[in-house]
Image (cartoon, rainbow, N blue to C red; front, side, top):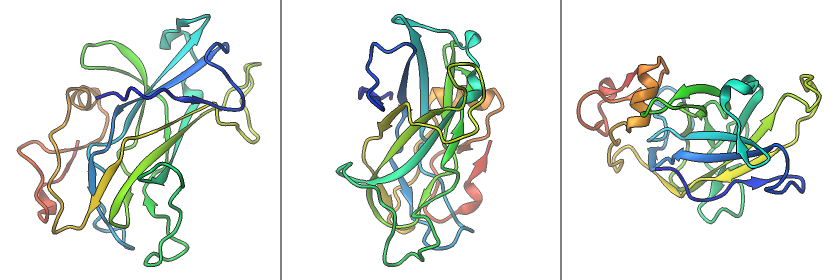
Length: 214
């Protein structure tokens, strides 16, 4: 279910700025299984975080066909349950290891939802958390294309951000199992997007052979 929380414009931008960039979380993670220091048995957050982007000018939504959609990138950070601080380190995890494992960047893709409507989406299908606890994810939107139409090769500014609902990371023994894929995820898989998916029933706590990558 999409979040009702509004994305936060950055650097003094307002909702009336032109163009306006609005990100929305279409799929919040509910839970996950901690992976510790190693990476061999990492299980991704479930369900995978999925976000959408709308670009508006003069209050009117611009269709993806009118945009250079390849220029948008989302970055994600792990935050505490209260949403007040980023979680950057832990006593049981070596300093060179990030608490949030996996690919923390996602490039924009134009995909059709379960109703066949095209949109701009970001998918984080490879995120895991190394420690137990309850956390949030904070997402930051960047545009690699400058207003002049030139690719930005320097430092990019955050143009919008949004935070997920809290989710819980369990040990392998207490992990309750994964949820079945949503209609949106199924629509993306049918378009060739590779995502963790369970074809029959819920994933078990311990049976790694039950996991498929569609």
